[in-house]
Image (cartoon, rainbow, N blue to C red; front, side, top):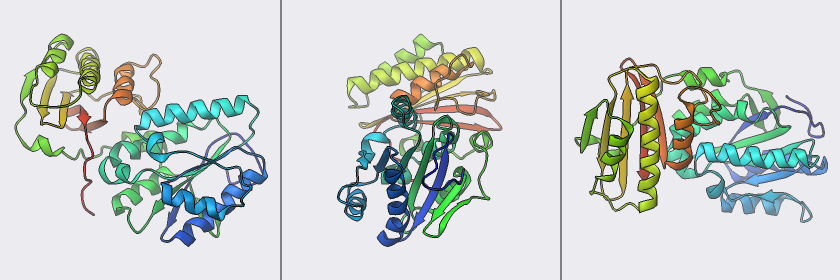
Length: 321
């Protein structure tokens, strides 16, 4: 996967870029993008507006790079994977022998919802491997927390620097990374007692419990999405988990948080929720929830498996380094 800039091949070349200045960013981005353009490959830039403009000015005025709006692409991990797969499938069907993307996650994703974006960075190594894709994911070392950089080192098979492109010895195979237990940072409203807590709910009762919460000003559409996601996750837990199943709800004016816990091990598919489930047991509900909830967290520990669903402005501050 370390082919030169003019060589197109199938399979995903996924590299991390660490930069501490605009000059360091451009020293990697510009040759990479120019190489794709020179090879006639569809070439994309997905950066925050100020850095996208920095790259635009550094490229030749005639450069035909395509610019994606980062805050629209990276709304939810599963939606980003679906969108990129559709984009690349269309490009390959149109004759593209190689595709390049230079991008970054939004700052809010890194600061406030990193857990499921860490899962995204691992899962795409599998999700995009059928395409002739080379991508570079940029991380600003001045502002990116240490624990995020540690995950970046485990989810990118390659590292790109101004001096070249090399294999990453710290890379962890996606199923192993995704199966590794991760702490679940409580949402601030979870520090209070739940408004609702009951055992072994059936989906109709779970739906009604969400609809009966009055302590929130969330739009009706967000509540409806949460109701659907809760119904799916409770149904999964009852059918495929291990009793008892416990459901809890917290809410304030701007958020609603629902956890569903059972004493089983959770789905066997490490990509559950991030990729379409097909016929995998327990995967369809997680896929739906990942498409419509503001945030979904999966957590395994010695007590069993927990799914946390959040509606509203979910952005959670990650633990300090």
